[in-house]
Amino acid sequence: MAADGARSTTKSRTFDRPEARQRAKALVDLAVTEIATVDPITCSPTLPIADAARIMRDRDISCLPVVDGERLVGIVTDGDMTNRVVAPGLSSADPIAAAMTPDPVSLPPTAVVADLLRLMLARDIGHVPVTDGGQIVGIVTATDVTRIHALATDLLTYDIAGADSVPQMVDVMRGLPDLLVRLVDANQPHATVTRRITDVADAVTKRLLALAENELGPAPVPYVWAACGSQGRREQTGVTDQDNGLIIDDSMDPGHDAYFERLARFVSDGMNACGYVYCAGDMMATNPRWRQPVRVWRRYFDAWIAKPSVEAQMLASVMFDLRPIAGDRSLFTELQHDTLRRASANSIFVAHMTSNSMKHQPPLNFLRHIAPERSGEHKREIDLKHGGVIPVVDLGRVYALKGRLTEVNTRARLLAAEEVDVISTSGGRDVVAAYDVIATIRLEHQARQIAAGEAPTNYLNPKDLSDFEREHLRDAFLVVRTMQTAVGQNTGILR
Image (cartoon, rainbow, N blue to C red; front, side, top):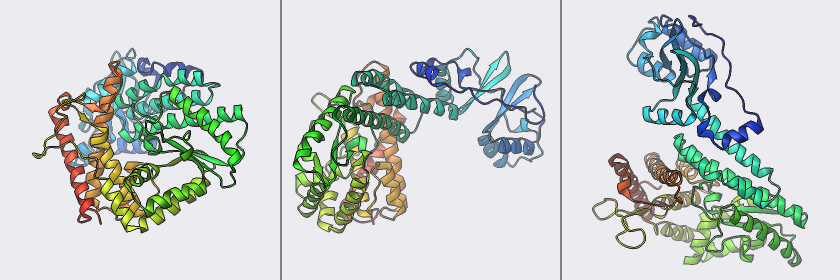
């Protein structure tokens, strides 16, 4: 029954592990009542705005359904308190009915999560009441949606961690494409989606290393398995290969390599089976070049920095994205700090890395319009990876080098560069916004392909976008081109 104040509330139902695992396989088919907060706090239409605000603050809730008798007549959110109370200058003594959204759209108890997602996206709302015959029985918020998607990721990594063999892991990994689609459909930020997708790759890597050690025995000397590329940057999408290396303690002797070669082969083969295909450039720990003690890795970086040839620039660009996944992380940490210090102090190397960051250009013509491929396999399409994401990744790497920043995630690098004054505030905001647009469109494109039963790609026909999306993508490309020019000239935006 509604009251002038708060009524008691029961938190959303929790998922025990066996039930949750089954539900995660068809998350969109869950009933909304399974994730809703049941018996939510409500108030009457006559409750003063000040009292409603205190209830929301004290109970730490983001919305307050308004009921008249037993019937839902409105809802007020924390956003409404700003937009409909503070901004118009309503009195705190006015009734909450003056600030509420009347007759809010709701869902019946029979609705499923798929219905909820469509409604939230179509109406751009973050709070949906669940009603039965006009009476509120629950409330679902964007936070609830985020929670179940986080749960789905956790379940995937949980099942991977519990797998006893590579075939079991392959079976678990069949759920990864669907997870990406669900995260994108829930309107999660691209950085959240790619981080969660990468979390799965990290879990696969760690489990394969554990299985390898179970089979081969413990490592003869300490080591750390490090990923580079998109896994290293925590930016994996629906299209990815594997890029990795083994950094081994300097106590390693030549006889130990046989063990580490077998370890690398086990993990690399297992990752390939799980969908992380072999690197075409052979930048994997199975290649002896990328399976070396710390002293050799130091020599690699020293040589690249001292003589920045074309190959050195390419290799340094990839290896500056290294991130430790499992093992003795101290082997990596000191190497990273020393390398950043030496590299940033070498102006010639920095200049070459800056030049290297210009190799990938946004697909714009001289009229500054989006320019798709004019022939070939991808005629009339643009490459959202090499023409959109990679140029920003390259810029972020240059900023990190100049600022000696240890972050490897591109968005984190951009934000950190602004904080340490490597890039101006306006320039930093512009390039982050541009990156967000490009990366989001890329993920949404891949999610649509997966949902349609197609293999995800990085190639998009701009005509598949709305006029609004296409214009925003063009503006984002223009920002990236401007930032590339600024970096090249080392004036204005880049300090």
